[in-house]
Length: 341
Length: 283
Image (cartoon, rainbow over all chains, first blue to last red; front, side):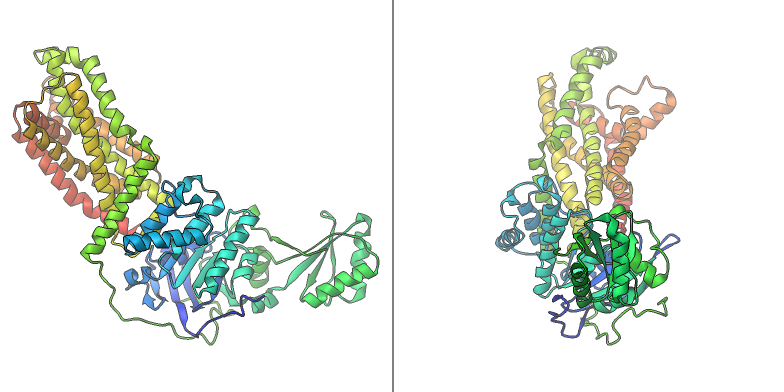
């Protein structure tokens, strides 16, 4: 986990939000949100649908005005200096906000001109960013013909034209397939490597872990937990190891053997008969290695072995003792990190 | 404010935020022109990439002119004291008036789509005057209106229309563009507030039908019932059609001209601030 360590923070906050409130009728979309993002770091804002993530991003990008509270972004007051602020921010929304009737190049060129670049500068910058996001070939076609991943990359490129100090990524990979999601993650990591401060909203624990160094958990417009990812993971429990014996008849004996071995620590191995797997909570890489070693030693044949991060629901359960407040889509389930078996 | 007691919302050693001075900057005139230019270019590229979006401007004048002239021309022409030729002279200036309103409607649907597609969020998070977006859209629609008018005049001449006064024609085109400009603010407001482009279109249709047919565009109003005739007297579509008729082929101009000017200015003064405010504050 290197990303949280290569942290060029010079100790200032690029984003500082205090007591932000936004009502829609009687619904409190934001109910007194405080958060800080240090310069050059990524803060993940994790929450279910309807938690207030998008409202937060829209307030901080001057698209809507909060009812009360203060917010400073890149040194500018969001409420009183919106125009100056807009020069410093980039926004990539949940739905790719590019003009699909224009070509990739024309999209970027137009935004360059809107950001006061001269014609040659805007052309150069557009070509540069198309190249960087591997869209040079597609640059002449209308964005309507692009795949989901290409559109998202064009959207990211559009956000980067003005060389923003702070980038908002509002659920940047929602609705993308796993391969495309990895592409987007790689791009985001590169931008962070260049010193951009990122506020990332997501429904996926895995995405937060991949990209963010700190995490804030939001529910019903309130921050319910926050801190460094490692601390938070310790609080909400680590990964779960899922082992599938080659012979399904061995499920129960395998679980009993693991409990007897003492390697499961204070937790116990549980049998998931429906899926034909044994689940063991693990706290460290050492514990994981020891368990796999013990199974091999005892001569179990393994068909599959994987670790899972806690799902959004499990995170909520451990923080609040309740299920997440909004109904979850099927695709918000934990994503599996395959471990070489 | 409500910070849950059992949580830490921020690192305890949270460093102070960097802060700049108090004032916000202003966008200069040159920047406004540059931004509007870039957005006009965008709308023109749209047309180049999607030529079918010009169908309404190119085909409607042709279809409507042919339909009205050949279906109703004979019988209405008789009541005008002539035949189909008399009707051509009557209906073409009316078509000019209708065109301005129909094209103006497109501004609303196009605008609504920009909101639905998220591109408007991108524009609104950029350091540009929000009016640039509106002005660019209106400029391109006025251009479309001129193209539609040109097509209309070509068809008109082909079906036997005599232009009595070329300066009158130019004045009539200018007047209908002015009225179209006023009407656009209504459709911009609808485009911002309605949930979908279809809703904007349906609403536009509801407003347009009575105004177009309850007017002197297609037929003289003298034979209409009293209440309808009274309505047509102050209907801006009648005003515009009558004024255009007077300017292009001769006849009374003053009443129609005043009605049209009053409506155009009135709509702009009342609706433009509403449209701009709705646009700026849309959440």
